[in-house]
Length: 216
Image (cartoon, rainbow, N blue to C red; front, side, top):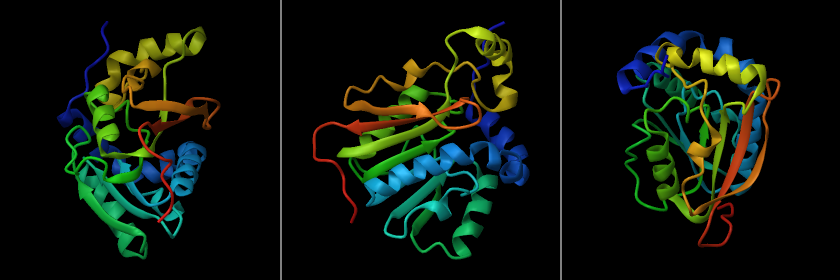
């Protein structure tokens, strides 16, 4: 049985179901990777784009000197994120509804681009990586936290068995790491386990062509 292809409608429906319980259900599962990604982004500093901001659960953890814009495709998730910002997150400049495959930002707009638990959700991961690369400044960083498919063992068998149900789950269980490494300007500078028994991985890319981005 082939892996199910995700589309925008499937994603919207899946996350409309998840939105009311997302933080309670997934907050503790994602906390290690989430905090590691935000800490790495804060070290880069400057203007930060959080792609797939969801409920905004990570927004309070960014350093006060950062200037953060977050967006998501899910209207239901964004309602929760906007309430978080309204409750007092002055470092967040905006919360937008947008498709990660068609970013409404100019080239080289951000010092750092962060995408947590997102790349297995989108219909066109390679297209999204092109957009993350495009809006990141030379010398800046693109930071991912995600589940990537195991190369063997029992986990790989389970992932392959779950693959046909990707549209119901709202993500690809058998997503290979190679699908995020196609952008020649993005060089992997760190790849490490990011919690939940090694299920998630933190990946930092540096965009070639300029000095390392700095705060301010």
